[in-house]
Image (cartoon, rainbow, N blue to C red; front, side):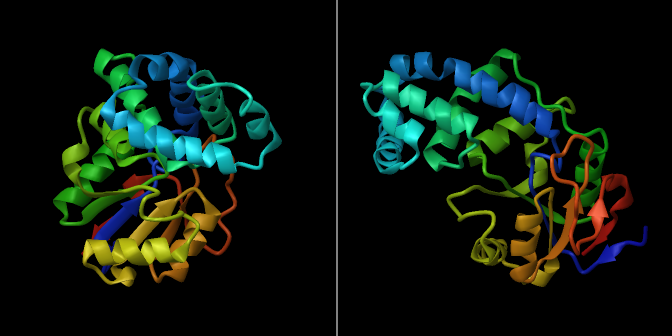
Length: 243
């Protein structure tokens, strides 16, 4: 494949793009879900947890989902843990939940229970792009802390130093073009000089609407594999970038 020129920044999704969906869905989410209640009970009075719990409580009070409403009959922290478990089950993108999951995963990574299985071609590609002078950034629905844990404890070692920027849902929804405009501004780059790769067609459409170059990540095991109008990519050994 001919080199892709004019790209100064590479913005990468994680799940289904650099890391298998199965690791997130079948390992990380259950790991956090089974430990939520005990973690909240042990740490409910920790100062760093208080703003997150307030955000979850507010979201819970405004949630019109019948299952969420039924859980409001329970008292915290039991009811709160059950509500957070519901959000995990439904894969809801509540920022406070993502922060809590990151706190729980931190212990798992520190103990060695959790190790990130990146796609085989990813570590070498990340190093090659970095050495070529392309600035690497992450945009994921997982918290920045969780992103850094994931790349800091991969099967290929600690890869955090290859990335210059990290973005999560505090920037905005990943299906919103304005989020990508904000990211381009934060990167100090015109949107056209940023290449975004994701396995989500809606995210690709939003990034393209913001003016970014886009590739659709088509990996085995991904739930969505139709790229729409976008060029698909399934091996980063084939992607050579020249700033």
